[in-house]
View (spheres, rainbow, N blue to C red):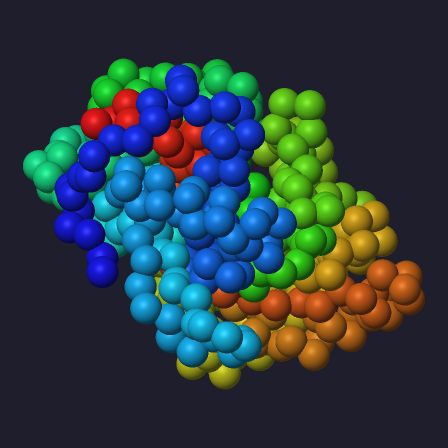
Length: 403
């Protein structure tokens, strides 16, 4: 039976009384239930390598803390008695913030990666870091009564289209937003009272697709997102995000694709971002702008030869980046999101053929291109993973501290 959002049972051992192995095992089970959304006791036993009685004890402690709950089995094929299913408590949630050049989006995401609420606050101009923080803090304050009554918030994650220092959440450079050396994580934490972390949006999205989306069950993938703030990328290798020394890895939008290309805002010339742009498509479609869904509808409805030519041109430059990526990282899956996913779905065979003909035979034959699976909720889910990070590392400690 699912508990009420604020239901509590008698406390078990305090966090300080738990030995490290017990804390680690609680964290492991909580993360597995979060990432899979539902697992039976038998599945948790197999995945953790722990014995049944230990798993049962750990689940009992997590249930007592209100972090998971159990339901009757729903038909897992097995010999013997069916095993109860363990699900994440919907009362545990994180907040997500995604600033863009024309809006700041704030989301509420349950444990299990389920987006409960998403509020897009449109801006008349590109928001400064302080303006984006003020918008997010105001929206969160407007939700405060609901949050305090129905949820235990583990933290806030901010997905930023730019270079973010992984250690302190400072945005070193977000060129499309015009931000430099902005301590947005600290600013939002001070404004809301919640723990806050920030990271690159594409890297967070890559992890979200790895856990919940098109990359689930894969250990090696490349993610590329195209939007109004340019093109970003994230690389998962051996099941882990490649972050680089300070979290700046994955800037695939600045792959060199054209020798006589235009100058990029980064100072180089011929970057992927300068040749593959949704702005060009909006111009050819004679549209003032809009989101990905509007662009997709307009492209499907268009019969203009100029638009078709531009789609083929952009796919050609995208293929150069994917060729280099496949040869370098040997991914199982390439996930395209935003308007890049739209381009691919308009002419999938074109991009597949270019990739197969240009990349090395071995890596090219192993890499499959897919559009992102999480749709418009992707950035909220990715940013929320930052908000869940501290909780997942020590669920009993943070749950007890929250009361």
